[in-house]
Length: 204
Image 1: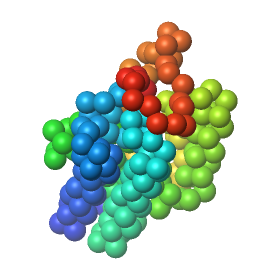
Image 2 (image 1 turned 90 degrees about the vertical axis):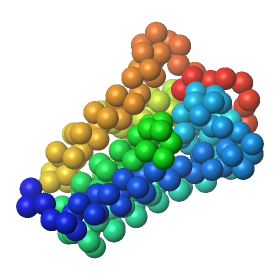
Image 3 (image 1 turned 180 degrees about the vertical axis):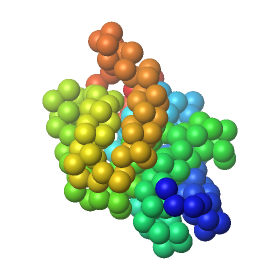
């Protein structure tokens, strides 16, 4: 990696702070709900779907994706292509462990997709395809996320080899964030996704 410059450091800080923006939390407050106390307690699109419905989930997903895209674009403009790749990691860190939300955020899938989309759209769309196919077959969003996560280093090796060091770290973090889901999948206890508004407590 090239010598770290002030512009690189600033770009990573900006990426992290962008990751702190939590559309699910904002939408929850607009409805008088603390999203972190409803459903699974996760500030991501899946829990938003189950607590607030499809429209709020779509907004959450799109904003999270755009956070990733903007973090990479800004970092590349500020400090070059290498900074753009590392911004993928830092915007995801800001999403998963946001300082403004006491380090309780989402699981990093949508924001990572947006960041990867800005680096290599072919890689991002292949990962999205894996998620969609896995979710359609199993009706479990967590399974789709985990499947894409496991595939990420392999696909990245062929499509964006320079991204591999960052990509492996990102994959490990997402797997860690899904550790409880992995446990439930192994026990056959993971809940399936339902594309309708639900108030009851869900686990994934």
